[in-house]
Length: 314
Image (cartoon, rainbow, N blue to C red; front, side, top):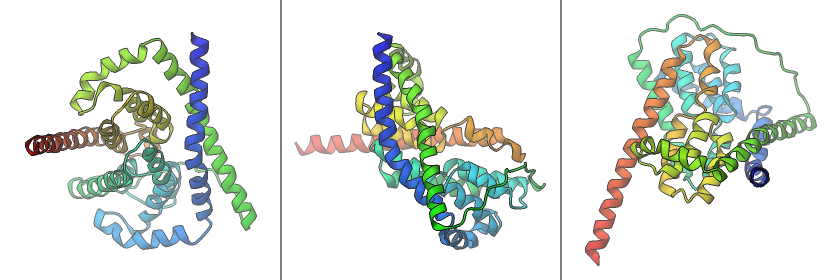
């Protein structure tokens, strides 16, 4: 039985890698090429005047644009080129924890049926609101943030070299995805066949119920929480197709996960900058729980009113 489970898991992993690869390849290629055009500098200049509203200097637009266009690693590289206080770096870290790698993560989220406007509203809304609150509430963090050494990058010139670099980066991204998704899908398939997944879902049922979701949402939920939206999307897509996860539950799961996902990597990555990472994690976790519970409550109330109206009309 294990051999059959492994075969099905590999096939599922290949299918998922192909599905997500069709998003990751063009997006990574385009964004990588844009780094060598005036587009990114134009975006940075456009939002720089808005930085003062959230307690940041104008050049803080650099890591924010890099983080949203690319990923947290690119954002940190941008942070290290600036002289920022601990408070300023913390604000950037919280904002980018809610809103980063927008193109790829939004694309894979849409593959599960979640509306794009929901994803963007939650991510940008949380980023801006959190920045304003932290800027107003926290009076400390005035000391300068520490940095760490960044490897020197080789300068790339010429259209052909830039395009080749973009293709290599895109293929590398798909390779990284496959290395994580393939074994993950095999493990998930084995857990399903051995009925472990069913037991796991039951164990998480009370917590899922508090968040307004059914137990069958637990596996994609945990995958996104630990691996992130991009890498956990494979499990989410499979669950949406095979486990009859409702549109409502998948949307609630993503609302939680856009606020709090990849909690280990996305938290530890900021430690070398000298900011308080425990508050960073707690802010994401508490925000995700409260926001998901509020949305679930409103959704249930709205559905209840609709059902009553339909019954009255009949």
